[in-house]
Length: 242
Ligand SMILES: [Zn+2]
Ligand SMILES: [Zn+2]
Image (cartoon, rainbow, N blue to C red; front, side):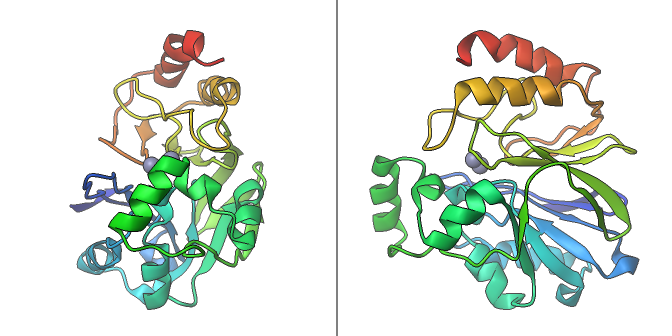
C-alpha cells in the first residue's frame, strides 16, 4: 500500500514476512524534482517499493538520495536493490553507522549473532552484503532543505547508535525510524550497539517537540497524534530503560 500523507510526504507500507519489512517514506515536493527516500526495507522488497513509487507517479530520475534512519537489516536489506535501479542516488547515514557500514562491520545490521546466521541462511546472504559507500555522514543538528521542505536531523541513539529522526517543525511531522511507534510502543533496545539509557534520553528529547504526524518505521502511522504523546510514551517506558 502506498499513499500521500500530506504535501511532499509519501508512505509505502512495509510488507512484513517472518522478519519485518520497514516502511519507506518518500519526501519532497514533486515539482522540485529533488526527492529523498527514507529507509529501504527488507531483502527482496526492492521491486515492491520501487513499483509503489512508480504507481504514485513519482519518476525515479527525481530521486536524489536515500537517507537511512538507521541501518538494521529490515531497513537496509533491499538498499542494494534500490540503488541498482537508482544508481545516482546518494546514501546519507549517521556517522556512527556510516563508519561500520563502509568498513564492512555488519554487527549493527544484524543486531545479534543468532539472528545473523538465521538470516544469512534464509536469504542466502554472504559476508559483505551490507557494505556501502556513504556519500554524506549526518551528525544530528543539520537543517536540511530537501525538495522544498525543511527537515531537522535529530540524533536519537538507543535503539541503535546512529538512529536519526527527521523533523518538519513547521508541519509537526516526525519520522523517527524505530525509536518510537504509534500505540505507546518503542523500539527494542537489546541489539548490538543499543542502549536503554540512551533510548530513554532520546525519547524524552523527542517528547519536548510538538508532533502531530508520526511516521515510524513499522506498524501504523498516526496523522492525528494526541498532544504530549511521545512524552507520555517516554514516561511509561522510563522505568525499563536503564
Ligand atoms: Zn531497527
Ligand atoms: Zn525496523
